[in-house]
Length: 264
Image (cartoon, rainbow, N blue to C red; front, side):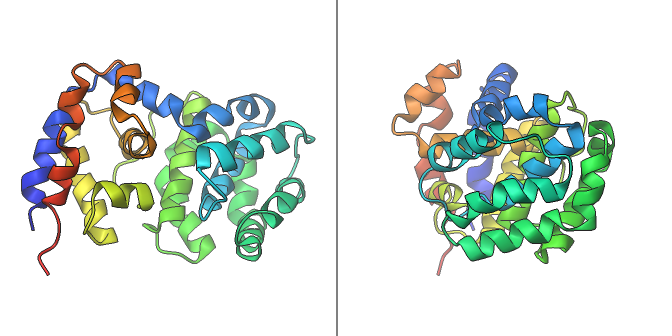
């Protein structure tokens, strides 16, 4: 495979992205922008429980997540009473997911998580305790949902949990080993690879980037990739982030990724 050749080139290009832009790109993520007001209304544990279930059900949407999912979800929650228990949150969210695509599956996932011992524990935990136990929480989310730890919705729920922790002032949590959630946008950027190969590819890119900026995690990298892949004008997107020489950062990006295609 050619990924050992291409990943260092992409890493080298992305090393020109300053730390301030990595922070900015996370701040532009819809799950970050839309949930801000709720981080101030909910108790820390309740807010983090919400972030996990919102991440778990962020799939097969009616449209783009930044338009069709996170804004209406925030609007519903903002206009509802502040929940005091996971059961209260279930009653608020159940009608929302009844109207989504795959409603039966999403309501079942809502029930499975919010009625679990994990949700009960998260609800009463401090943000500091969740931060310290993040990797254990990852394993428990996977076990609760009956899925592999690296499945897209499980991993994405850890990303939204991590973003929730950032909102609550926690930034020292251990995110190493938690991969990028492989969705359609990442598949477009790394075509021709299996799900495991895509994860390995971006793990390699991140490992190289961390040699220059140790604070980087897949929260930062996935936020950049996901937003870049969804932009109609990716150059403008990078310029708005203040990335120097944006044409250098992503020039030939698809060609580099195409070189990783498997030889059938």
